[in-house]
Image (cartoon, rainbow, N blue to C red; front, side):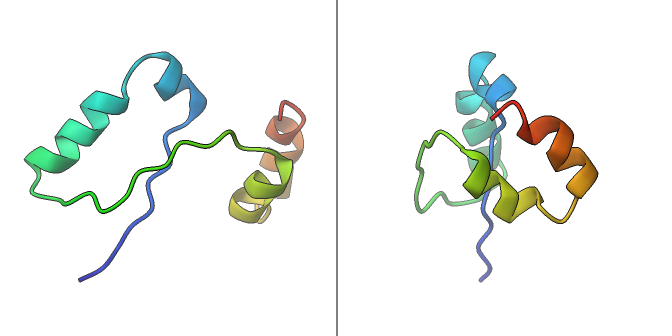
Length: 63
């Protein structure tokens, strides 16, 4: 069985959507095995989005 990492962007957190997102996964029969909340910095973001240099240059400045 595969595992997937899900990242909720800051606007989703600010809008209070975490519970709704988790609920939808559970309703779909998916099992959460771990949950962790972190504040993302440039280093972490570059590992996930560094392949898209133009996007990261624009958005990465805000981190």
